Length: 326
Image 1 (cartoon, rainbow, N blue to C red):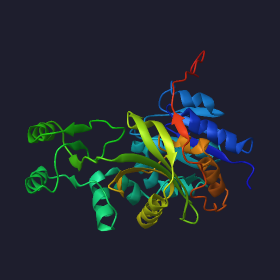
Image 2 (image 1 turned 180 degrees about the horizontal axis):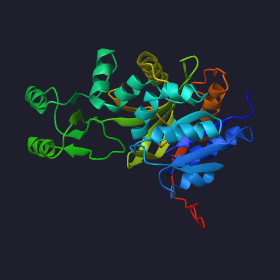
Image 3 (image 1 turned 135 degrees about the vertical axis):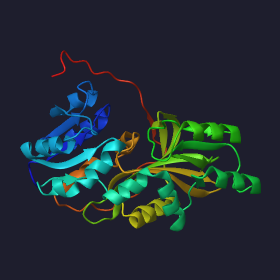
């Protein structure tokens, strides 16, 4: 294996655990370098080296990241926030040309993940169950009249993240108000069932799903799993493996799923580390190690189901204190 494997984690924010896990897995074989637009992003200070960079939407951002990669011999790059993923995927070959691998799906797949209606159409067309979704409110009203769907429903941005502007509504009047106030909304069926999350790794070389960790969500906060318990079901594994292969997803994926009447419905797909991934790592589902293997040209073995059920995760607050920022 290559003995000089440096990883760059972009938009690290408060995701200290991800930085710590990569440091542990590299264990002296390379550096974990972090970047963020704020010098007060606590995860920066768990990295061996860090950079304060422009915001992702500022002109020249990609050039700054490419320069960091070239000057620090970065072998692999990943981002922890949604808005950056499409931008990176669009520049995949710019990174490959300097010997850097992006741990990310292809641009078209990433874009589909971030458009809830496009993902809904893809799922239904390909035989997967998904919550009924509408972007035309008149079509929704017609289905309410026929009993195909009932209140309550969720109204949210088609391309939103982190549970921002999600509203549970119970009447036509509320929907009319939200559609007047905001553009590009989607109406989604309320799933009255058990909510699960899955951390999935699709090998970057073989394209095969090699890890699936499922957990039942007990408590959520700002769109992230705050408390959860590990869970196993071969039926769910089959649904996930079939979906990620058909969709052409790669790398680390976070999937939200509902179980209603013993059927699994795929709700949302995030093509990055989910906020609840530490649960998987602590149960032995070692995605950082798998990423490092791929960066080094090694194909990972299939390890689906290699964890214990009934293991609880509970997040709690920690602090980082420094004397100066840089």
